[in-house]
Each structure stands twice: as C-alpha cells, then as structure tokens.
Image (cartoon, rainbow, N blue to C red; front, side):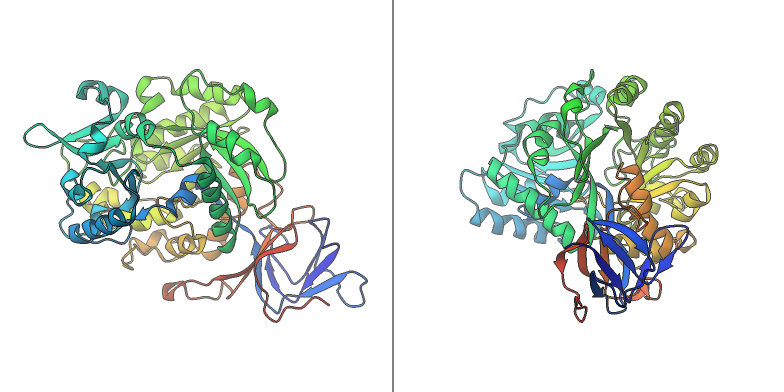
Length: 522
C-alpha cells in the first residue's frame, strides 16, 4: 500500500499533544500527517468506521520462543486439584510417543484448596517416562525419578551457594521439586531439545498469536544460541518487531558478536539480563524481612548478586552496547537493582523487572530516582494477590506491585506479560491494572488502580522506550504506522464487566491480522 489516508476514527496518538486526532496519512509505512483532509485527495483513503485506534501494543517482557513452545506443551494452568493435575498428565501420557519426555507447565498450588506443592508422586501415572512439570513462574519444577536419574545434582550446600534448592521429604529423600538454580543450571541443560523445525514452527506460532492480540512489538528474553539460529534468521513477513534481551549471564560475557548482529526496524538486540532473586509464589523472592508463612525464610539472592559480581556484570553489559535488565521481585532485590540503575545513570536504558514487593524503603529510593524504568506485569499482581497476605502479611501485601504509587514516584512503567508464565493478551493485563482485581475477580487494594491512559502508555510509549524501539509506540509524525483497531473505545468501556477486543492489526500501514468491517478503501 502506498500513500494512504485513514480517517473517521478516534485516534489516541500516545503523544502529549495532540492526544487525539480523527485521521492520519501514511506514506512509505510512516505517518506523515495528522488530522489531514481526505476529501478530493488523489491517494487511497480508508474509512475506519468511527473505531477507536491506538498504536500497536508492545509487550515489554516475554519469552517469545518459550511462549511458542508452550502452545505445544501440556497445559496445567487450569487444573484446580491433584486429581485434575493427574488426569491431565495421564491423558497426555497416553497420546505421547513412548520415547518422548512429557513437558508440562502452568500449575500453581494457589489454585487448589490444599495449597500443597506437587511432588514426584503426582507424576506416577506416567510410569517410567521422564516428566517435567513447571510451575507457572518457571522458577520451580517438579520431576519424577526418571528425570532425577538424568541429573547430577550437587550436594545441598553447593546448591544453596548457587542460589538453588532441592526440596526433601521427612526421610531426607528428594521430593522431585527443584527451585531456582537447581532447575536452571541442572534440569534445563538435561532437557532434550525439540527438533529445529519444531522450534521454527513454535516461533512462527508465537509471532502470529501476538499479532492476533494486537501486539506489534515485543521485548523478548532469549539465549544467544537461539537468537543466532532462529530469531535473527526471520524476515519481516508475518513478523513482530523484536527487541532481544540476552539471557546468557556467565562472566565474562561474550558480546563481541553483537557488533555484526542484525539491527533494523524489525529486529535488534538491546539488553542483557541478570536474575537477582526468585519469585513470590515459590517463596524465593528476596525480602528484607522473612515471609509471614515461612518463618526465617527471606528468599534467596541469585547469580551475580549472590556472587558479589553484579556491578561487574553491569559494566560489561554497558561496555557491550547493551542495557542492564534485572529480575527483582522482593524488596531486597529491588533495592539492589535500583542501586545499579543509579550507578549506570539515566542515559542507559537500565530496567528493573517485575518489582512486586514494594515497601516504604523502595518508594523512598524511587523518589530519589525519578524516571527510573520499571518493567512490570499487571497479571502477576492479579495472580499473586490471591496469596499475598499469607506470604507477606497484611501490611506488606498492600505494597504488592502498587501501580498508582509507582507512577506517583515518577517511575516510567512499561507493561508486559512474562509469557508463557501468564497469558500474553495485553487487554487482560490492562484489565488487571485498571480494575485492580485478582484472578478470582476480587478487588485487591483498589487505591492502586490506574487509568486507561496510564495503562495504554505502559503498553505503548513506555514499552517502546525500554525496548529501544523508538520508531514505534506512538502515532506521531515520522513514526512507523503500527496501529490497531478496537471493538470498543477503552476510555468509555466498563472494564469491570470484561474487556474489549482487537479487530484489526496494522504493521507499517498494512493490515496483517483481522478485518475492518464496514471500513472500505475508497
């Protein structure tokens, strides 16, 4: 499509001014005029039928390849009891080829009444087949004896030094539950790789799945090997725009290859990630004070923070031309991440990811760092709100990802999903941020809800900034024309009654998903 005027719409631009326009002109895939005349023009004109239009939405934190692979795995996200858990596994076991490992994901003990963490006895229905069942946060896995036989796990003292845990029963034997480094450093390397063609299909499925949901760009956490063998070789056809954050973390970092890496309007490598702690659900997020329901347990520091090399890691990341990206969920880990952000300075797009347990000490530090980039996931708040009071106590639970307070401190919030940990649907994330409801539909500290515009900015303007994708995220002159058409105006919609939908997705002015019913080219 060449020069085109899109008109008859309510267009939220993402700009300070003008915030809303009724039309825009696109030429060469970029916006060249706002509020333009469409009558008696020689170029093509598209009537948008009065729809609400916004910039394409951006997921600032997901795992694109893992998300695509999760579409091919056994889904445990809806099970609500041990019986359902075992029934799903048994059915999958019957259908799977005998020589394949069974990989499942998505379970959470907070969804069943007993709150019991699964152990290897729950996997007995699969016999001697190796079985791995990841918790929804991907920081805990339960495996059976067939998998444990493949692993060479070090002693508990060594694991603790690595920032990992192997849970044991009263008899001292392994229960099959592996947490943090025990899962990352010892289980993941033992998992059989999917055939490369299956992985290509998974990645393509992930791109298409996101586009259907109105996502046009993502910031994805990936390993260098996968970046070079899969991500970099994709063309723009049927693709998202992708900003990569590298997950390779062993010092010294090997970043020389980035000088020759692909960098264009569709793909770039912008960051490197370090994990500072675990997760709230696994009780491994590092807190300043112990968990309310696990006395003496403050969670764990992990990786560079545990080893005392976090500053060195950040220096190497910046020297390699990337931004430090730090997973930090507990207040103690968040404070360490903010300290690195201060040291690196505002010119580098350093970000702290997740930021769930926000105490007065964290808010005080944020007041001293206005404009700091926080990449957060509203659906994590909705999930973790279910057990926040039992894990943290009432006082600290009030500070579970307090969106309104974070914005008041001047933080720039970019929103994402952490897919496949939770749904990648950005409208579900918006609903969680706007209503403050937990996953059961119950209001959780409604004083921390935010407005529609703040939620839109989190999924567009701020997400583009933290992802280093400055050519998208808003519909200003000179910006790439990635935009979406909504079924309803989100500013007028009652989010407590559900969520709107995305009816059409455009990339560089071209329709790539959906349809504009009643919108005709003239």
